[in-house]
Amino acid sequence: MTAHNEGTNATGLLRCSSGIALLAVLLAPAVSLAHTTIDGEMGTSFSLSARAGQVSMPDGASIYSWGYTTGNQMQLPGPTLIVTEGDTIDVTLTNALPPAAGNVSIVFPGQEITSITGGVAGALAREAEPGGSVTYTFTADEPGTYQYHSGTQPDLQIEMGLYGALIVVPATPAAGCTHSAYDHAGTCFDREYLFLLSEIDLDVHQAAQEQASGRGPIEVGLDAYAPEYWLINGRAAPDTMAAEGTDLLPTQPYNAMPMMHPGDRVLLRLVGSGRDPHPFHTHGNHVRVLARDGRLLLSETDPGQLAGPRLFTVPSTPGSTYDVVFEWTGENLGWDIYGHDPADPMEDGEYAPDHGKPLPVELPGAASLTFGGMYSGSPFLGALGSLPPGEGGLNPEAGFTYMFHSHTEREMVNNDVFPGGMMTMMVVLPPWVDISTMMP
Image (spheres, rainbow, N blue to C red):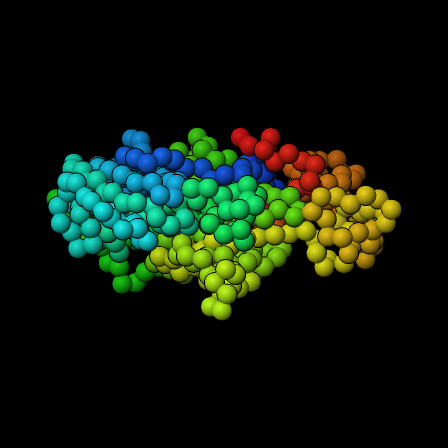
């Protein structure tokens, strides 16, 4: 792995924390970050610029990067563009990168560009020259999860950060749905979250930074590709769980902190950016795949029926997108997650066959346990128990937590330091907790 000294604290957070202390840090903000819609830019007309800046990693590294933005400061990833099925969309791109970076462009996989204004011809798209602009127009014909990225020297410019997510929502929800991902009742959901997966190779970024003030063109060696950081929505853990839009990460506004109630249908929109595949694993349950690359997976014999598989790990690959549904009720745990007596009423979303079943083990006494910051003092959802002074305290609603992460274990580090990287937590909260009140 490449050593990185500039802006790096060699005794950063991950290096000096024990596993238990780190878990407390990872999850401390969890009780204030849930949201039921994905943060992004909504509308039919967008003005983006490509700019240079710095992104931060949890070990203290500050890394030169490029990114699309709607403001004067680059961001990683670019703004999530949220548009409505059937609308005509205009995206104007201005090239504010250093002149040595050359031209820049955007391609929109899954969308048919109907007109282009300005720019110069490029290999994959019309390009904006340094200081220039180009406007792309397309009609958002099909709902789904897509991405956009540079079509100019993509082996360099995508690695440097010129990518983002495009979400096309149905013009009206499918019949019987309050929210749906597609025009199909099988795609109803209660909450949705974006997981844009990517990576950073320090050698490429350092080489681009060294040449950015020159005449150009920027040329870097791309044969021995060896990333040191792996990201969800532009952040590495534990920053994935920091507050959305925090001033501590000004160029990385999007977090990845999913929350749900038992019984919720949670739509996960997975976007594979970068050059590497990232097998994305959800603890707690399998997911049901609804669509890939913005197209529903339907039965060949009955086109009205969804036919996506249930997966233990989603095989996210570069350029691909997946829409999957995650559900959790405590099904088949073999005990009542609330600690009910058989005569107690059922909770919303509870797995009925386990209602009233006792916990099948006897927990050791407090003197024999080591307590993480998220332990509520009780094994039951929504229940608080007694804890020694100074223990716990980070989980006042007594939720259950499940790790969501890359199943390539080397991607769960920050420049060789574990844990970190492509990792976050799903927090299951009791049904009486209003998740909407826990937004920042």
